[in-house]
Image (tube, rainbow, N blue to C red; front, side, top):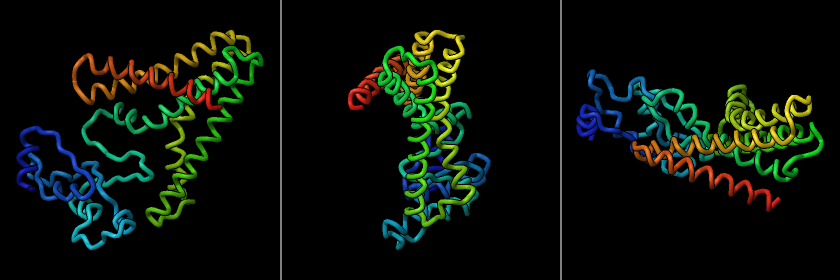
Length: 249
């Protein structure tokens, strides 16, 4: 298997693995003769997951073997960031890592705006509701994920590293809410009309959904129409979910 992976890499093929499959990358060589995974960001089933699922009888553990061969081992739990990539431009890595939070915020903000009415009368009310609601939900989500991570890995949840990770995961969602918040603060100061602030806030969220959908389309198939279709589809689904969330509220 290692020889096959070595030849595939030399031929420029895209390589990936799932769960214990990362062990198949460990013995492979790069074009420089070094270990293929050396210095690369790689993931695989964690020691904590192996213990949790009761499969500790496996002779080798990906987390240990990948580190042994010089890989930069990465993992996330609670069904977040289930894969890691090496070689993708940093700007797209950042977007893809925060896609969940961005989409969540881009759906939550329009639903909150609809719940307050198309053009809220009180100038500062939308800013307060948006920031407060999104902050509360985001912190609750981050806290639940830290608890889940502790259960899966037996790791402490109140360390500086854990708090920093939770905050990093919360930032994208808060950013999505902060832009409309600033717009409504500007409306409260008389710099914008309420109608303009509402329209720009909704447009901002739709743009986020369209960009993420277009990126998914490009990843699936490198042609012009998949990104277009992905953007339209994601924007439409996001808008529909925002209306559904408003209806349920």
